[in-house]
Image (cartoon, rainbow, N blue to C red; front, side, top):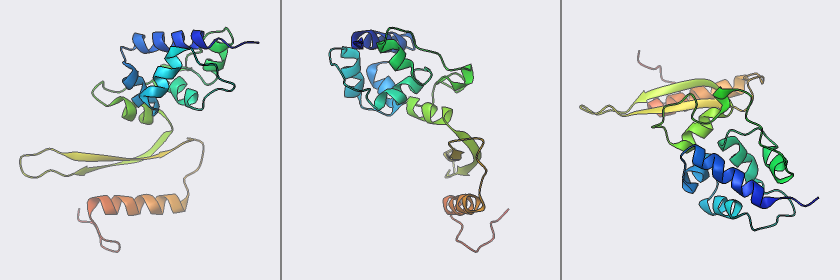
Length: 164
């Protein structure tokens, strides 16, 4: 069966336009180059196998894995199963697309907010500890590494007791 790459190109273009995204916005959300999006949206290239970048593009567009294959084979994309999984659905719009996409994937185990402000400034850094799978147990080694990272971000040398 011949795959319809023009059909996939149109589906990507429409999904991107529905979100009000430019090609660069989709590229940022998916973590791919703008030229990757341009090539896919051109729909003129015939691929012998699906580009690896399609997995990330599916996620960025809120499509379930395998949606691109379904489209090129004549079907439709399958939306992700819950609205919380769709990029941007639960996060403020002022968060960059690439950060929103990263936050939508995996499981947040813990966070650390570090005040970097000088007098008159309100700068902070947010550090997230994420795991790819919420079902996987947190190991003692991971906790030790997270503690080391927290101490380093706060400027606490190893072995010192943090001030409360």
